[in-house]
Image (cartoon, rainbow, N blue to C red):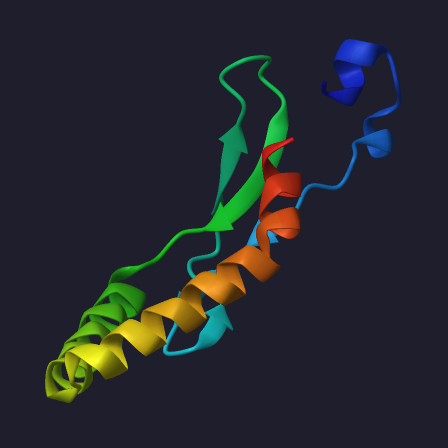
Length: 102
C-alpha cells in the first residue's frame, strides 16, 4: 500500500526495485521517465521500469539482427546448449524475480 493510504509520512514509501533496459548485454537507463508497475490486485507499486526511446529501440533491433546471424550459424546442438545455460541462469535468479512479484 502507499504511505498516504496507511496514514504514514510521504518519505516512508517503501523502495521498489527498478528494472533497467537490457541492451547489448548492458543495463541502460532509457528515457528520463520510467513506467510504474502497479499490482492489479491491490494497486500496490511493485516496481519501476525504464522506457526505451527511439535510440534504444534502434540499438535493440541492430543487436537482435546480429544475434540472429550468430544463432543461425550455430548447430542445433550449440543452440540447445546455449538455451540450457539461459534456463540455468533464470533458475538461479528465480528468487530475485519472484521478489519483484510479491
